[in-house]
Length: 356
Image (cartoon, rainbow, N blue to C red; front, side, top):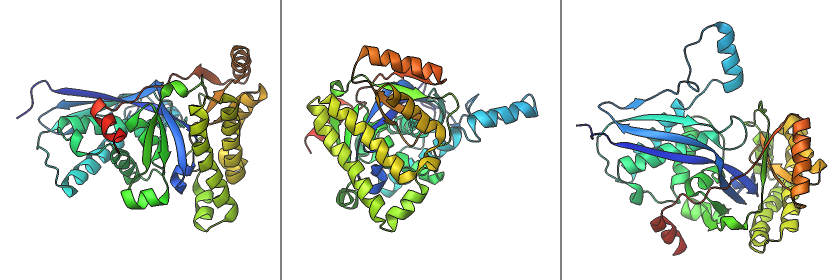
């Protein structure tokens, strides 16, 4: 029997990796926050059959011509969000089954929309998965049975089903919302199965700006060689990644003290370490150009993720922001103020975290 007129909608917001990335996949530490500028929306409607609804643009399969098909693939890629919705349904069901969480046999229809720029290092894929998980938690009334700390693991597991290589940082930022400090030390990961996640006050953030290109380069292979070298115990990679993690740890204190000149220094150092480890070829010319455009006017800058977009901070204020905007326009780059988005957790969930 279909639940009459039941409709559940959730949004998951893009995220900015502020400090410490990419050390989350190397037992490191990071600080990230969610941004209101871009988001994915998933809607769940009770229905007689279980349906995963294709998006009219992102899952397009009807074309007017062969050139249109090629243009669409060049701009959007081969994959839309249907596979992401299917993967989180599988992971959610398996988790409930493995943990003796009873769910009803009610069916539903899942649909999605997103305005998160593709390949911009803003966690567009995980945004869709995160929003869908929230819908499933509410539809089956099991939100209190799936711990907040575990939900990022489920989002990541769904993406791993599809061969997406990533760490937990993005998923934590999108599940929690707001500004979050994360400690992924091996001890925590081995003992708890997840990191230690500490929500921070969003008001600690200075004004930040997002720089990105309309046609960004693919950031999906950035980790490859560095990962192998890290696993092999390469001294340079191991020590550099430890320093990246320490930047996040120091950054937490710096933000709490509102020492923004030091914060700018940490942002720049974070990128410089990434560049020395991965090399310019892996990072890509366009990605490096975005960082250098910001630095040309004295702004601090680093990747928001693995490339595709840059977060910039102008420690000298309004006049420097204008210089940055002019420089971005000259180089054909898009720039906009970042609007941080507050925590998505309920008061009950936040109190649970604060008592741990």
